[in-house]
Length: 386
Image 1: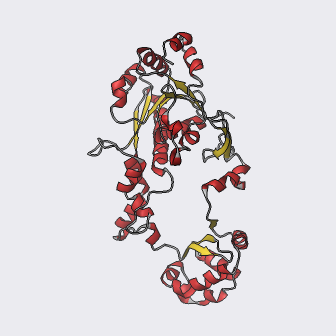
Image 2 (image 1 turned 45 degrees about the vertical axis):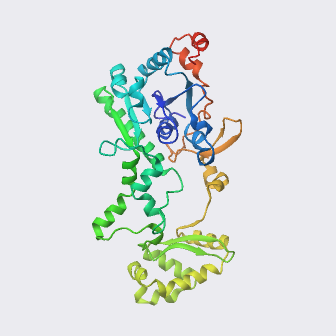
Image 3 (image 1 turned 180 degrees about the horizontal axis):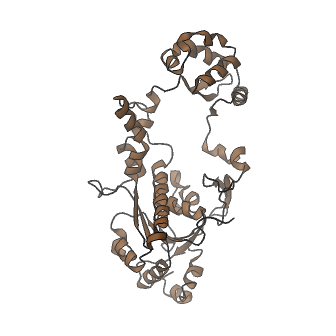
């Protein structure tokens, strides 16, 4: 498959989620992403618990160069590599790479066409010096407040800010690459967790501006739709159903023997139904409760109404839709096991970006990468540089 970023070389100095996610976006779209790691590999490889999936999810389609950057020889080798690169990605604490000679000033002087992307906690401002994490910015930016019930802020159930921040970084890189076609010059791009969080809750800020009323946490919100919630089924399962138009309301009532509700003028429009939910909701609940989960979903799907079972991440491995058209990529893990993980959620001319390379073993491509620069690989190994 010909990919749009074929021929683009990316050097990635990153760990955890945000930086690797930015690199993944480019790698899946065809860029040659070289992940520079310390000898022995990125510590993210060895995380356990909630972090155990970070490395395999965000590092496929990349090559690994394991090298001692604190040695003069290692630094010189990587700088030679950067001379040939289009993009540089990093997500270390502010100033860390400047001390090593890999900051924006040094690398842009070395390679004026280089696009330098930093993934940080905060953009410039009073908070720039702070150390940030996904959870930190979810808490301070209002996302945790909106996710949990009143008085119980709760971070989202995935690294949503890290992932989205990586996506914004990749978007900035692509914009800079387009501009470079005209100017021939690189650009410094910075994406940040806090500003990403603010963008994600922007709709709630706008709600306050438009209505004068602050948005309530999602579990306590007043929905804009009269039917937009979980319903119990006969077999003690749950199904989410949403009815978001007057046309869908008519379909629902006709299909479940509730035609009499259509005759009530107080239920004629959605805004009326939101106010008068007590007049009809018990009847909807009873109709749904009389059916099993499978039967209810089959009927609602046939009606063309929005619905969803309450899924778990581990159930997606066997999801027929994701498995049908390359939505899951079957790859080999570092320990030799196999796993199917989600592809980039886009299609190009009807095809999903495929797996080009499994997540690399630490230093798996070191010899090839350095040999391509004309360096003496055996000598570097003998001196412990690689």
